[in-house]
Image (cartoon, rainbow over all chains, first blue to last red; front, side, top):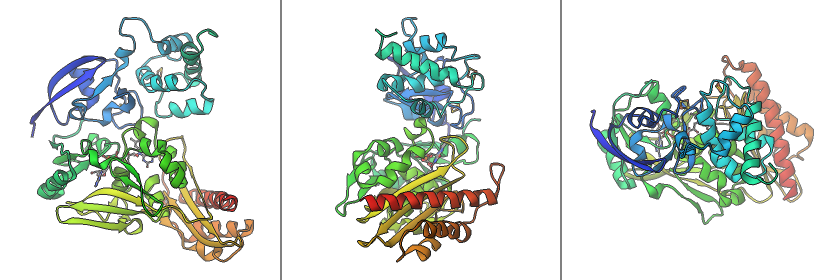
Length: 162
Length: 292
Ligand SMILES: Cc1cc2nc3c(=O)[nH]c(=O)nc-3n(C[C@H](O)[C@H](O)[C@H](O)COP(=O)(O)OP(=O)(O)OC[C@H]3O[C@@H](n4cnc5c(N)ncnc54)[C@H](O)[C@@H]3O)c2cc1C
Ligand code: FES
Ligand code: FES
């Protein structure tokens, strides 16, 4: 039963190859096999969004995939947002707008929002709320997160106005 | 929690996939988007011995025009692909309007049409929409293939016409007839959560503006998508007046559904929601039919 499968996957631009059991969740693979502990695990049933990563560029729940399924694919985790140690505009905006308190939910919000802020130069509040509907935060009450999204969009798309 | 151990098979063709299902029968489960199956495995509510992962079967992922003016959707087509499809927006506006109500963006990036209808959660949107559209589902096994009308595919709570060695390969959704209006609405406690109640409507008017045909399908208030018999009985042949639509909605919510009560809402409240939502979607469907 505990047959091993080879997983070869690109994470934040680096190629990793590991032997894993089929039942290993992608979230555990990222944290335990690759040591990238920025990806958080809250519920393991798809409800909280803390484990969100980009899978071939699209946000997905890493707790609802098996690592074997990532073989040959490309993943980006929160560590990939600041490769040179310099924060991504989205991270700066979260910092400046007080969009986090304990920070447990933050990696999931950031990975959910990265493609959203890049492709939505002028979203409505409603669109922002829908974009983050799959991420739970128990601290901030969300309002500051929405402010941070607007600030990040300003930084990315309207930098002369910022 | 962590899922139990299983044997993992990753076919790349439908023929290979159904051969595995034939070989392992009741012990095997197809793995589509995993957005329902993996949570139940993480909780150990499901412990399949074998998973047949369909994610590398490319031939199951498509949205194609059908000759009858409708659309053919491959079982592994993800919710997000349906949501972004221009063909669906043009030909199946009811489906187009409904998909954004399914779960959250991250889940729509993985979850599939075939997975949703095979799972047959009575509170899910796609089973109800497939029934509202008079859709048909194509099943395949090593024994051959067969088409099942949506209404006969959903048999009860998480139960479908699928045999253990069969899988869904395609969903065929015919276009709505001319002079037909549509609408979908639901009530959920938070956006993206499973709804307490949802209702889809399609209303066809005659050239004189009377009601020719009504489809009113409820979700979340029975063990499967519930098609109203009362709404057509009240409306067909009539002018779609506000009073007539009100009566149709009230009677449908009394006669055609079987809501349950739980910690989120009592059965009586669900029935109330069903009548309010039914009136709302019937009204919007009639307005759209008149505008066409
Ligand atoms: C937090 C959360 C919220 C959600 N909210 C909603 C919601 O509001 N509305 C909604 O509709 N859904 C919701 N879902 C479920 C989601 O839409 C799932 O994607 C969908 O129900 C199942 O599709 P899947 O492709 O992920 O299937 P899987 O989880 O892979 O499979 C589900 C079942 O179908 C079987 N199966 C899959 N494909 C086939 C096939 N081709 N042939 C035969 N059997 C097959 C599997 O063996 C399994 O038993 C939610 C999920 C989560 C985690
Ligand atoms: S840990 Fe994946 S959604 Fe909560
Ligand atoms: S900052 Fe604590 S959960 Fe969001």
